[in-house]
Length: 169
Image (tube, rainbow, N blue to C red):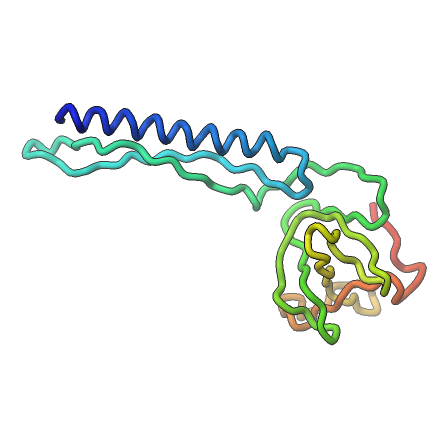
């Protein structure tokens, strides 16, 4: 390995550690942000080739980031009746409402919602006022069989059946 190669390897290691500190700093800065999921730094060795004795010639290191959106976050009591939490797997489906059909669906685990003037549950204005969608339960209170079809989603309206929107345990 040349002197230049040695210096490059060292500099790439410093850059990777700098990126790792950036990821950690972002995690710390956003730990109170509703719905924020931490990221984890990953490192990969870069190899530029081999010489005649099949010895690897180092090329440095690269840092990356893996989001942990599939991990359960911390559930906290908020004291707000409109807030919802998911324990386990799943996402809330939100999007713009046009003729009671979802437009441009988004998925989130942040369960902070507000009631609109029309009675719809929606994300706060700073998050785009996206309306929450869900499936209408059948007469037995069960999820319908077409629960994998996004076209069957309906906007959640708290004015629809007064007295039936009760908190679960």
